[in-house]
Image (spheres, rainbow, N blue to C red):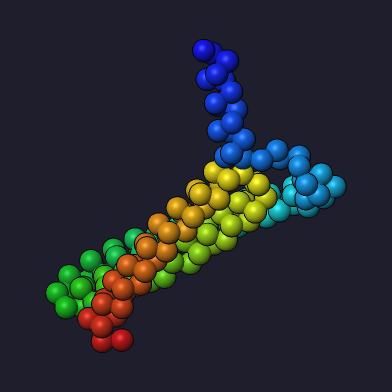
Length: 143
């Protein structure tokens, strides 16, 4: 019975992924794979930096608008900061999608392809609805 379960597991793993050493890319061009792996790390770090910069700018702008204490100016200031934060989030998400695509191309695993598809769908939905919200806030601001 244990042998059958192990065979089933190996069959599932075989379906979900390929041998990383298979093919020219991971065999003869291994140096290129390592270079692109580092590129993915750099792109991920850039995305994180963009998100952190956006969050920091939002907090500073939010506090500045909140200190003004005037109703209409305060709301407009906060809405301007929301639009700016949304732009940073969208830029960060786009960088993360790029890194996921490169990672999946290097991985050669079917499960990573499914994971990429799921991530792209989720991030695209977030981007779509965030963009819609930003348009609404811009209309409220009269921009």
